Image 1: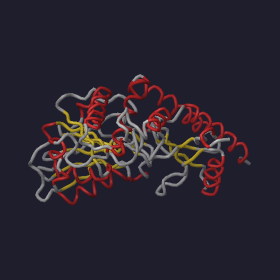
Image 2: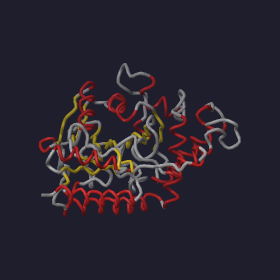
Image 3: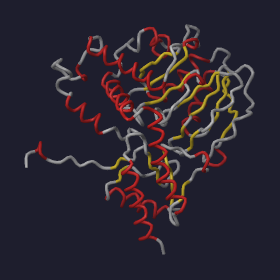
Image 4: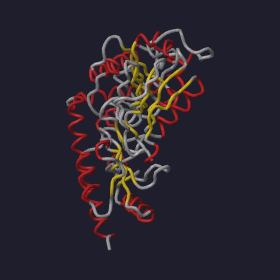
Length: 368
């Protein structure tokens, strides 16, 4: 059999990120790898100043605006440095009074809070660390600081599998949200946020791009002294995300994923599919004699589902046997242990159904 005729063997990839991408998108990118639309070159090789690339990034932005119904007074920035670089960029650009309030519901919100402490007074106004971040605290009446420049949340917690179902009452203060692991998984009202941002490597594209959607009045020259040019939102807003060479190929793939989501029916359709997939897994966990979920029911994420057997050796056995059966990256984060299935937009429903079938079989074989 020729190399070309070999059937491609795809696993079910439950990685939390970099994560599964739509097969359709990967195939399309493969077809365009050597010659993008008659240019005779790959997008990887293309000048970011070329007309062809200019069209790619502008079309990607237009499709994202369409998908999320982003108002005209918000800018869309395609940046580098991952979501973690935003932990510093946000206080550098927004801490006018040098005060900010943080709701700490997981490791990434905690890291963002710690970073903000470098630049001003960061107040931890709510936390779920007391129960290993297994729930979302009540945020209906928090002690929001009168002089706070913003209130910060991580909306979906990848490691711990929790999700804000109701946005916090910020008492008129600007809401900043890291949505890395729930980006484009459901409809969102952008006007409720001052800044909504996320790394794309979970639900949208390859690692290396972070998308920042920011209200125009928050983009100013008035930043903290010493803020590098590259870490000013204004630098990137004024230059259409091309002050320097952008992560060009990553943005190209993101653009293809935006089109794929539109083809599926947009964010309402994505939400319905994601709810269906999550219900299959959570319903099994709720009735299982061996496995159990680790998150308070009302705070469960549609994207990241952590679970345990209660026995570390059995957890390790499950991960090993699952991998042998074609289910990859089910080991839980090192800070939590157990297992975690990340079931992002591109995870097909049959992937979740087959995982549950395997879990039932494992349960039958390992229950005394």
